[in-house]
Length: 374
Image: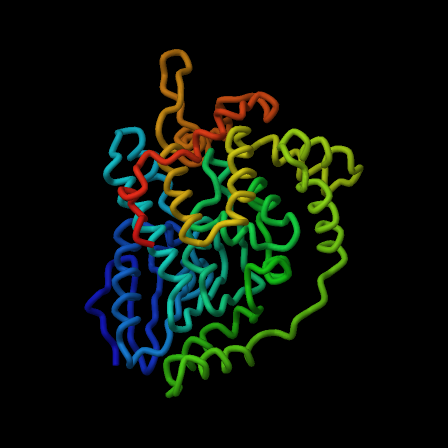
């Protein structure tokens, strides 16, 4: 049976056999999430959650070349920029409140949720995949939480799932925004199994055509599709040693100094990357991940909702022009594409503790928080 009643132009929904299927269908934008897409996915998941005929859900992203190849590049940052520039706060608030509620729904979903993380999986794409029961990556997977490059921080539950990575990998990934492939994703707990990209259509078709008896049966069958677990390669082991050594430091200044003192080309490249990121958001991200390590998912999402409120609103003045780190970062990377962001600080040494702490303060009373019911 196929049910298209909930379809939107950018999200295709099907109920076939005992499964619900979600296809993100905005390939020209690498399936960047709009508010309409978030609402469509949420409505479908709630409907299937309460439907005893549906035993599990699978999600994929279309590319320009076919039904796989570009999972989701994140939220629609052009929308963020425009809304912040025009003070369309109600629209921005609705987007992030509903996106974070969707992230929580996926993490707590009572049925198997299978994420086909093929191609680009970044930002909001991580938000709709990391809570999955089965997270599949391929040789084409390009995974990252790149928010510090645009003056933001790893949200969509990023504090929660990055802080659960081994050692100090979460701090490293969150601060640098480094893109990783399938091997690192599996080794660092951000994916469950690797399959060859050529196998994806067949797996998707089998999920549609097989009369599974239970959600457990779906998960068991998928487990037989994974590539055998491979030993972590030498390069990843070397990276982990440097990451744990350097990113265990208390402050970004000390992390940079440690990286530059390693005498290793990979560490030097890592330090150079950090110097390109927003100094303010490096400090905010470091604090966020460390605080989230001791939080539940719901607590972290509420914290992130506070943080994003501060992130896209002006925080000061520069020649009488309001300063907003997130708006400036998006401008430089996506709008004007000059790749010359004018960050508020020249280096991490210039960031003051009170500037960081402000991001963790809630603009709402506890009972009025938009995610109070999570």
